[in-house]
Image 1: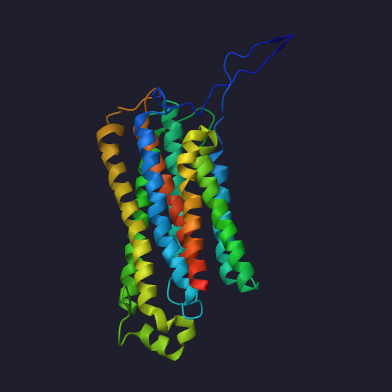
Image 2: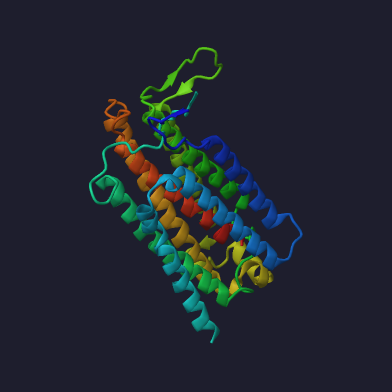
Length: 96
Length: 240
């Protein structure tokens, strides 16, 4: 037999662990940019992935987007595809 | 008989939400402002990518002109300020208005809102200070918003090795660098001033409580966004 839960909710994330991840990834970025012998294109892709990953960690856990309603998340998310379209179309125009 | 665990919602909003939007108006306003700021920085970053995409070989190589270790330290400073900001938020959500308090059985004292927000302000001001030092050093070496100053050491290096220093587009390099980092620095400065204002008018007089800490959450959103933008800028401007 189970008794109903009076109140359930979100538990606060471990902020120090996220800080540690951000710190390690920043060091990784600098090492990747200057020390590791990888091709320029691969380096570019890896650096962008790391930057987006770090930005996502900040947005999701420090800005608490992970715990927000979807309608609020949309306010922040909608400009991003618009921005990607803007940059892509201008690059495509330049390539023609 | 088993009992379901009862957990408290630690991410509850700091005040009652407005009907309709589901969040209180200050927070909604900040999110709309941040959405507009996303577009603003996207325009800057997008223009930079397009310019670099068109002249890949002519741009200065990473680390040739810019001081990456110094900026790496600055990035670390801003990440630290972001975590101290979220600790300030967590502290006031738990009703910890104090600066530091001794906790029985623990060596380190427990930080409250006053402590963590002060750490954030110091780290933010430190970031602006280091950025100013970086600007002064760059201008002194001959890297200005108009490009490499004639007769400077950098101009000589660029003349000798145009591929490494991007001699052909030095003006564009300088203007895009100072515009992007300058606007970001302006955002950080505004954040530090706003936090100082909150610190002296609301935090020190203990006007925030566990039931209402809207100002801390709203300035926190702004501050984390500034950190987020720098994470992207650091990679695109300094490392690529």
